[in-house]
Length: 347
Ligand code: VTB
Image (cartoon, rainbow, N blue to C red):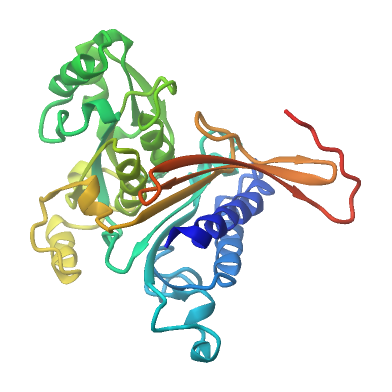
């Protein structure tokens, strides 16, 4: 699966990131997202593949592009049989978030990125548009920390696994009312909290690398992005657990204010989820034999730099992680603009 796809998906996230980055700081998150979606879709449809979006911009009736169920790739065209070897071509599932952290991009804040995960058909959990309680931690703590334990207990475990004092640990939490108690508990336990306004995929990925000074992600974010985070962390051998959250009283967002728990439970059952309280591990959320993750920085984060424009070109930094080749590659690309003088900075 990897050989050519691995290279092509780099360009998919690069193009989405460049498109969004042109709108960085302009205060229009919808537009930053829209251009990323368009660029991602356009590049994806040039790849020799039979792809299907399992996590995307929403249901077909609410998203014109990269909607759930949309087929992408050259070999999904109606006449594909004439130029694609459909019998031998593996069908693949794709989870996308063309502009993860749209607010971060719109307000010029660090940590937004264009991301996707790919696996063979059925290899990614088709998470409904719900919330998810998440716990991400470095590989040294994989299977030792547990989302069912309290933050205090998990911090003790993390401190042992990482051989760091509790007050040396940094936990990323999204700044939301629903996390007030969690934040207080982490601080009370002695650890430090890094509050972010958005973008918990980037925060989860930070947990997978030492040297980021991020040791855990705790709290509730969006479920679809949880699957993309799980794909990256599974490939890195790090810890990720997620549990769907359906109670509006826990989520406490404006968008969910007029929903009821019962309605949400009914929606979950409709989408085929019977065990609504199940805790999913990374390898259940991204269960495929082969999983690929790619993320390109839009604005700079701890792991990837953001898009830089210069006279004659654009520079991007992408992280590609593959379970097949067991690699995490950082791809630093200079995209030259044909009709401009080339004046390339090496740093
Ligand atoms: C967003 C977004 C995150 O979760 O906050 C979202 O920035 C859901 O939370 O990156 P709210 O509805 O409370 O804003 C993420 O999309 C990812 O999980």
